[in-house]
Structure formats: C-alpha cells, structure tokens
Amino acid sequence: MYWLLVLQIVVACALAQQKLPSYIKPCSTKSPDFLKCALASANEAIPHIVKGDKSLGIPKLDPLRLPLIEVEQNNFKLSLKDVQIFGMRNIKATALNLDPSQFDATFEIENLNLVGTHHTDGKVLVLTLQGEGPANMTGVGGTYRVTAAVTRYTKGGLEYLKLDKPKIDFTLKRAYFQMDNLIAGDQKLSSDINQILNDSWQDVLKDVGAPIKETVSAIIESIVPKILDKVPEKEIFPE
Ligand SMILES: *[C@@H]1O[C@H](CO)[C@@H](O)[C@H](O)[C@H]1NC(C)=O
Ligand SMILES: *[C@@H]1O[C@H](CO)[C@@H](O)[C@H](O)[C@H]1NC(C)=O
Image 1: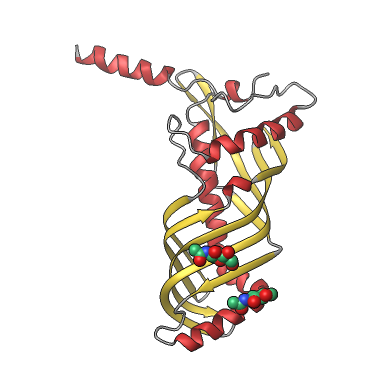
Image 2 (image 1 turned 135 degrees about the horizontal axis):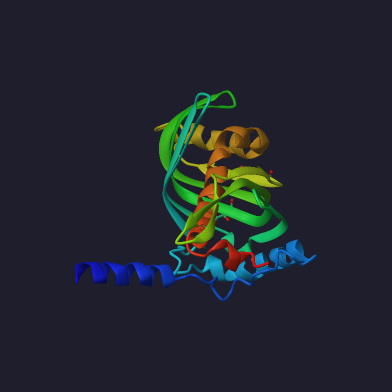
C-alpha cells in the first residue's frame, strides 16, 4: 500500500509540468529563424513571467523581494537587507544566442531600482564609510549581458538542461545612489557623501555596483532553473 502511494506520487510528479507553460512558445531548432523566434518568444513570455507563476514556483518579480544581498570586494563590505527590486516589468531581451553548451542573452532594463537597508563598512573612492540606514540605488538605461554554460542530464529517461551560475556584465547610462547614515551619527557628512556618490557615480559603481550584478543573477536564478528542472529539453527546443 505504502509503495503504491509512493509510486502514485512519483508518477504524478513525473507527469506534472512536462510541457512548457502556454505563454512560452517553443521554437524549432531546425528552423533557420530559430534565434529570431526564440527572442520574440522570450519577449512575449516576459510580461507573464514577471507576474510570477505559482505552478512553476516562480515568484512575482516586480517588485521582487530578496532578504539579503551581500557583497565584499577589496576593502569594502556592503549588505542590503529586505531589498525590494522594482523595474523588471520593463525588461526586454535584445539579443539571444543559444548554442547547445552556452546561454548568452542581452537584456535592457530602463530603470532597475533597489530599495532596502544598507550596512556599509569599508572604503569607497577615498572615503571610509561605516553605517547603517535606508538605501536606494537606481541603474538607468542598463544593458545586461548574461552568459552561462549549459549542461545536460537525464531524468526519467528524458534529457534536461541545467544552467551554471551565470556571469553578468552590465553597463548603465547613469546610476543614482542614496544611502543614509553612511558615517554613523553624522547627518551632515553623510549628506555631503551622497552628493559625492551621485557626482562620481561611474567610480562608485565599481565598488557599489556589485549588488546590481547579484540582483540580476538572483533574478535569472529564480526563473530559469524553475523551467529547466521541470520541462525536458525536447519540449523547450523541439527539432
Ligand atoms: C529612489 O530614488 C529614485 C530616484 O533616484 C526615486 O525616484 C524613488 O522615488 C526613490 N525611492 C524611494 C523608496 O525612496
Ligand atoms: C545628482 O546628480 C544630478 C546630475 O548629475 C543632479 O541633477 C542631482 O541634483 C543630484 N542629486 C543629489 C542628491 O546630489
């Protein structure tokens, strides 16, 4: 009896989500227009994905909530807590290159805005910062290129795809930083520093831009594996 139940659950799970959700149009890999089709399909699916998909376990993405983003580089430590990320509803895929072992896609996000509580400790430019308070970062006119190795594995006799941790490169037309209380207890100095962060945004981005990368990486990782784990390769990329 017990084993019958287990068997039923296993079969039910195996049958669940074998197909792509209806808002993702599969594109034939044999078609000469495959990449064009895949790019169009991605852009049609994005507004649906951004709303979240309970059946696939994809959270709502605008705003997306991340409990913690932590980055550390050189002499600088920054953590952002209770982060809300706005702007994903305007994401557009602008280039896509899919080969059997490499995922390579470029996205544009007009305004990617992170709001949370920062804890800062370390040097930015020549300033030594140590404090905690509300933080607001915005990346304007961003182009984000996501590359990741693709591997294959077999599950229940079917081939599935798996994406390695993605590498993100991005450029922004402008970034805005507002981080309160960067020097614990000194309101005036903190506000002068925000002026400096704002004016020297390109240099600041080198130290403080890492959370943006982490965010984009977290977004990709909260969508792509949810689909790839459940839908076999031949459903996503039929011949
Ligand atoms: C964050 O900053 C942007 C502009 O830099 C502003 O439009 C937005 O209202 C701010 N958000 C919060 C929650 O303060
Ligand atoms: C930030 O810089 C922009 C122009 O680069 C300026 O218009 C704006 O007033 C500045 N904001 C702060 C808070 O310094």
